Length: 408
Ligand code: PLP
Image (cartoon, rainbow, N blue to C red; front, side):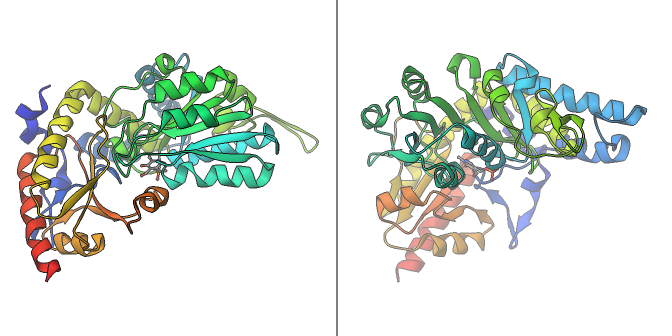
């Protein structure tokens, strides 16, 4: 589907895009924080509670079996989408943050104070803090791949800190603060050459382009459904079977057990071992509908259109006097972070919110990046395939006015 030719019919699928905010038509440019949901996803949730609501995996009755079937069919959809070897390598969690915590806490069993783990300077706090907690528990040391002025990782520096002491490397596929697309293939290959595992945080990649976990040969890949038009509260963790078998169970409870006595409990096989308790059944099923929705438009079409929006917006924004963009990697997607002169990003965000324009301001849960540039934060706009060049023009005019008002 050519997005450019179908943009108006695509927009009609998203009821929120027709609402007004502060008396103005909403212009939603905060998609990296959360994307909007189309009717088919909203209907899926409503349909579940109207017609299917029951608990999964444990009922002989028809509703429970139907709900289980839909839940497990959704797992197969994600298996196919990511090209995993088996559906049991797909674990449903509550989000990227939960998925990372599941893996990092499992590594407590594998690390000691002689070991090292590697993060990058471009990470979201979700991919820093859980690993710091792991270091506190085990005594392992965390090393950092530095970035350059353009917001790209220095892979020569990575080679220098990588060693046989390195046990796991955890990097995002796309930076949520700058939009940089990292060369994860090279990072994975280098990490494997010293026997280190790799976790890729794909929260900002999965909405924008294809990901093939087998081609990448990645050990863990994580993302959140709410970033690709799905509901909040659902995450996907892909893990190679060998790793998921080795990792200890994360939470104890119903569903994840094989046999329970007061003396000893044995755990279920994958994927149930990591899905204790009643999951977000309606949300998981609706995430599968969101996945179908973006695949129906086609990720190649989405990428092509969003790249067009990115270059259009970059050019227009740079016309604004005193505007500086942070993150100028050649390989970049759907995010533009900027400041205008020395105006505080929060002041710009609040002013244009009065006009119905939703952008994110602040550190974007990526304080080390802001520290690198020695700034308090940025204004960040982030695109989805339903955004238009008209919206960008309105934003640019609003920014020009805001800049004049706030410079006085
Ligand atoms: N990692 C990245 C790169 C993100 O952009 C985000 C959210 O913005 C997260 C992790 C955390 O995702 P969630 O809040 O859905 O767990």
